[in-house]
Length: 117
Image 1 (cartoon, helix red, strand yellow):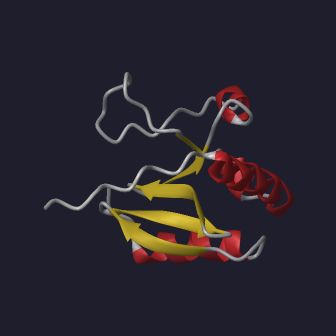
Image 2: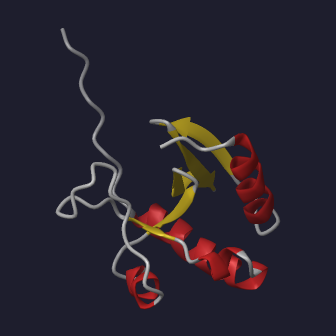
């Protein structure tokens, strides 16, 4: 799930031209944030955006599939691969980013684990 420094820089430059983004290493990959929300993941040099029922059809219509961190199609994460043409078009990227950020904003926060006694 490694991400090269050059690919990370490339993605942050493209998305940063649309709106401010930050990143953080996560499980050998990369999490990308905007407005304090994780809206994208990068694994093995592939960019995935957060999805729900509101934007998943756009990804499916483009022939893109979900992030399968464990290789099991029965256990997909709610992130889909971003079509290359979206990344290459700043106007289109702005729309897809806004939708993914909105999805991340609607996602229910995970309950914090209670510390063990």
